[in-house]
Amino acid sequence: MQDSQEKSPSKESKKPSAGWYKPRYVRIGVLNGPDGRPVIVDGTYVPYFKMRGMWIHRLGGTARSRLLIEEEPGRIILSVDKPVVKVKKSRGAKSA
Picture 1 (cartoon, rainbow, N blue to C red):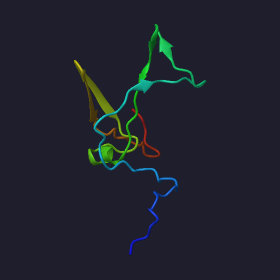
Picture 2 (cartoon, rainbow, N blue to C red):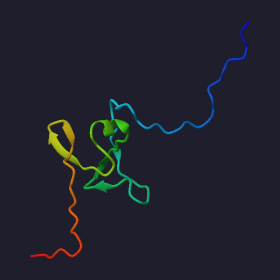
Picture 3 (cartoon, helix red, strand yellow):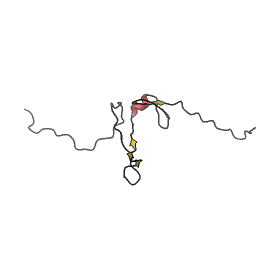
Picture 4 (cartoon, rainbow, N blue to C red):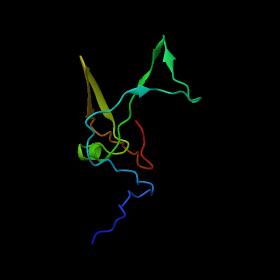
């Protein structure tokens, strides 16, 4: 015999997703200023979008890496830029 009570979905707060799967779409929103109001330049709202998730890491993007931004008509192309190599000067090295 089955329970007559239906199991209701848990009302516990969901854990944030790590974003393992690439979203199909990203919505372009409006940039808000520090006061929370939309930023308007020359009568136009400033477009804004954010991407996050482990799918970026799978494509070679790591925290603090740089993205190369290219454009074509109707397209924004983001590529992981070559890593910047920092060279440390050794102590006592003399500059020429």
